[in-house]
Structures are given as C-alpha cells and as structure tokens.
Length: 407
Figure 1 (tube, rainbow, N blue to C red):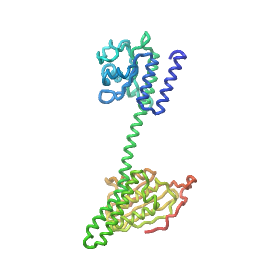
Figure 2 (figure 1 turned 60 degrees about the vertical axis):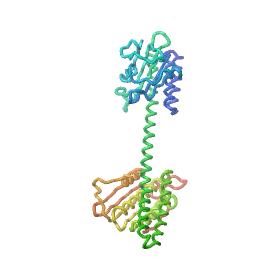
Figure 3 (figure 1 turned 90 degrees about the vertical axis):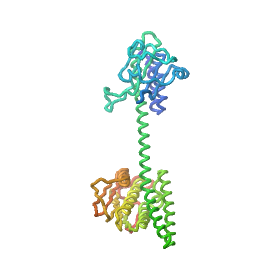
Figure 4 (figure 1 turned 30 degrees about the horizontal axis):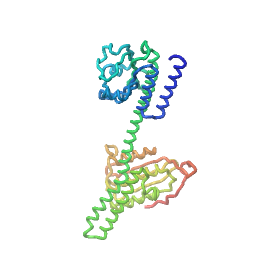
C-alpha cells in the first residue's frame, strides 16, 4: 500500500480499530474511529460513514473533518438520495474526479455543507452465511472526499477504505447480533416468568379461590369450619406471596429450599387434595442428590400434573410415583378420570410449560391419555448427581434417603 512508514501507519490504525471492535466499545465510537482513520490514511479533507435505516434515512451517519458547529449548521441527517443512494444500491466501489459532474449527482447541498470535489466511496458488505463474496448485503458505506494531494484518489486509497469497511462490517454485525441476543433474552425471561407464575402462583390461587368459596358456603351453617377455611386461605395467600417473590428473584421454589423434593411434593399434594376433596397417594423411593435445576423441574412438573388431574379429570384419587434408576429419575402422575384424546389438538400453557421444563434439563415428557380412561404424565430426567465438595459422583449413587413409599 506504499512505503514502510505508510504501511506502519496503516497497521497501527487497523490494530486500533480491531482492538476497539473486540473491546466491545459502543458501536458509534468504533465507527467514528474507523472514519477518522480512513480520512487520515486516504489524505482526504472529509470522510463519512452511513448506515441506512428502512425509512429512507440513516440510522447512523458519522462524519470526520467537519466541526460539531458546522454539522449543526448543515442541519438534519441526509436522506438516501443522489450519490449516497448510488453507493447503497450498487454495492461496489465508486471513484469520481468531480462528484458534481456525474449525472447522478442531485445538484443540491445545504448552504453550510462543504463543497466536495473528488470522491471515493466503498460499500460496507455483510458476509454471506457461507462466506462467499457475491450476493452480500450492503450494510452501509464509507466515503472520503476532497483529496488534499493533487491527482485524486488512488487504488491504494481504495484498498485502505475497503480494509476499514471490512472492520466496520464486523462492528455493525456484532452490534446487531448483540441486539438480537438481548431481545431474545428479554423474550426468554418473559416466557420464564409466565411459566413460573403459572406453575407456582396460579396453582395456589386456584386453591385460595376454592377455599374462599367453601368458607362462604359454611359461614352460616358451620362457622367453625368456615373460620378454618379462612385461616387456610390466609396461609395459602402467604405461600403464594413467597412463590411470587421466588419467581421475581429467580430462585428455586421456597418449599424445595426448606423441605426437599419429596417432602415438598407431598406437602403440595396434601394441600390441593384437601382443596378438591380427592386423595393424592405418593410413592417415593430413595433418590440420589440432584442439582437445583433438576429438582425444580421435577417439582414443577409434579405440581402442574397433580393440579391438572384434580381440576379437570374428576378422578377421586391421583397417584404420584417418584423413583430413581441407574441413569434417570422417573416421575409419574396418574389419574383414573375423564382423560382426553392425546393424539388430538391439546395443550395450553400448562402442558407447554411442562414440555419446556423437561427440555431444559434434557428430560423426556410423555402424556398418555384416552377419553374415559384417565391420564398418565411421565417425566424421565437424566441423572447428574454430585457430592458437596467432591465434584460429580457416579450415576445412581444415593446421597440422601427419601424414606419408604408413603401415601
């Protein structure tokens, strides 16, 4: 690109830009550095970098060689017209000895705009998914104007601008990927909150509603029982509040933190069983120690499946089986109620929530049901057990007893 001194300057400026890109500086700061370096190395009086928006204007328009006061006098950002539009539409380098002599020039600049003569522009191209050079989208452009030295812009200047355009493409692509990742994170967090609110708080609010109705019926004929139901409503409301705080803070369910997996499922089963006047029988074998994610998934799926069976199946009894094999923990929730067509369209947030939770720990969820023949929800969660302070233990190694089968 020139002599040794010239090459050293190009190397230093490119290195600074690369460092800026990898340091995750604000994208506008990176673009400003790119424009300043391009103008200096091309020996131009002015330089600019434009990133179009989808409304005929520019999402970013960074300039160098013009003072902030002069920019304010020029006025609003330009639109996608004249030679700016040409660079965006053609997507290839543009070199003109006199921009005003080109028939595509619009023939108008704001009064405070500097008078440009020769112009060199190069596109900022997005790499195709396969890395091919053709059929690449135009992210924007860099142009330099009014060469200080006689003779106009050269092939060497074009190569310098193309080099900086490549780094501008990286900076813009990184910024867009970051924004998309941030949007996905927001959507995922919203989905998590909706799922957790449904699985945790909604279950207890169903019980609050049922007990409040029971208290209203009993208040005249059996005040003592009505008072007991009201006390139960207050307790449930307190539990729902604790669950809501846990959801907001992103913590495990409060029951798990204090009672462990089997005890927490048993406690929930007794609570909702009384609410709906049905019996929930639990059989639990000895389980290995599970990490918090797996315990939470097993608890939430059990909670959802038990609640669904009591609310919708009409079954007088629900069975819960929890046991460990050599490679997985198996949860089954079974009722003998009305069932549904498992092959037909069904779902809702409850079933979708169970599926998402199972997938989050590489588990397998199956639902077996037929009209009139009850429903079985089965969740198999692969083991990943650990001993505190000793790393991961062998699959199936018992770490704590959960007691013999209970009902």
